[in-house]
Image (tube, rainbow, N blue to C red; front, side, top):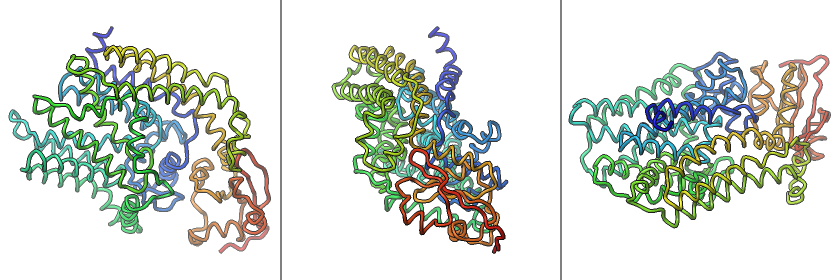
Length: 559
């Protein structure tokens, strides 16, 4: 059996990854803000027929370029406008990522290293979870990592193929350019800093022709969209300008309150990337007599710390911002595990400690979540906020089996710990690879939908219901994109009303159709109801949300 799997590694990885990443993609609603934001941009492209420009509320949206959203559009054309379609592109990205990691390990050393690197990535929690999400970062990270690999191979050259450096440089420029079209110029920044540090320390000479080829291809790729947007759309230049300003703001100040302590991303990687992180740090200090492998270890180490330092400096700290760390972490961890398997290294105390912490966090923690959530009255008194208390009062149909993924994971990781202590790494990886799909799919099927029942589902039910009417929909008192997507909002029918005045017009103006208002319960004060939205009547409440309706004017005088 194992021999036949080894004979067809790419087909094996494809099948296993598909079985792990595709099921239950649509089991939970999209989560505010990022998942709904990107899915709504894709929906609006389909509704408006404007596939060139990213939009939110049918207005130019400058925070993100369009590449990932185009993939979501293609998925929605196949599967409909729903949660599964919004997340399906990342399932495909997950499959490609494991194939790229296997290929990387194979080129650097052997099939064995390829299996180890891709296997470590596959059995780690956050990498696995992101492939079942609808956020941009998995694709963005894949382009950066693949681009940097080709920069490395272009720099090393191949004496048997004199033109290979320029080919690799072209491919690197293409991949980093696509990364920029996915999320922004950080793709180029990370690759340039990593390569620059490597050359400054170990090789002062620069391959200027290859750099020129890279630069030319990169500019052609990014200008194909940024340049065309600025040149050929009415608000294109302003959109590009706002995009650049937004990128600077992410570095200089915390956006949307996402400010965390300076060690935030270190903790996220060490614990969230369990068990891959258990081996990554030791791998940074490894030496190799083979030049190609030594270069890879150096560049992966530099990439790791460039990302860590860069996003520690950045004032806006969000958990997935440092997810690029998982790629160099996997390669470095793979080298260390390979040395353990070949008896050149032993399992160290810090690796055992991190493994125990991960076991407690993900095994015990998820099992505890399942047990407590099914008995929510145990923890409800601990929450003091009005919204939290109201949300926890929502009637949620727990099955009683929510503890099962955590229990299974605890048993499997306990078995894996025995193999780790004995340095039997093949069995260690195999046990975790078998349990990981069950664990993450169990969380997606049993736990996440019920957490959403508390946090979002009442609002989403209301929005889906009013979305069937010809009505205006507003959200007030909290930032959300949910009303755009789940109420299937169409373009505003009165473009003569300026964007900044539309909310006031729907609240107080001579509206020509019903207006529905969604608000969090903790924002609904007497002033909210009797002054700001005095023309609305409360029509219901559910969980942490209150719903209002304003009837249209009998004879509206439209502007």
